[in-house]
Amino acid sequence: MRERTMCFTGHRNIPAGQYDAVYHRLKDVLAEAIGRGYRYFGAGGALGFDTMAAQAVLELKRTYPFIRLILVLPCPSQASRWKEQDQKVYERIKAQADKVIYTSQRYTKDCMYRRNRHLVDGSSMCISYQTRPTGGTAYTVSYARRSGLAVINIAQETACKPE
Image (cartoon, rainbow, N blue to C red; front, top):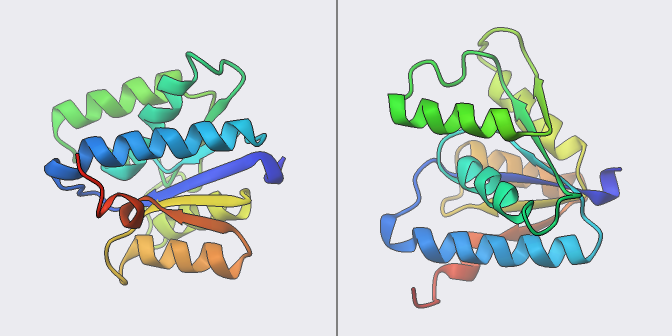
């Protein structure tokens, strides 16, 4: 199953002027991956790129009903301090996911890293939105590369494209 599973990692903030280009490039990459046999898509449920990726998978599921969205969440309280609108989007995504996994039953200082490692450990490819060399996304991309995953950085591929 790992060879047919892809995970996502990315920043919480995507510049408004780049949002549509990133989303369309992400959907193109996903459609290509589905054509190559990928069926399972793991997202971490965070704001920003994780949410975008989950929404893209759910949108593509209308065309490819056999694909599956797997949410790997750090803990049940992940969204408890988010804005109400963001919580509603999160709950809609959770309700439509094919599977929801929690890597911890409560928030801990390392539950986000455990979530990220779980996503990578179950995948053969990682789609990222990485614009800086530090932070959780950079850690996850580095871990994915060390683990032998192919990594596609959507941020690099959309940086020079017109919107």
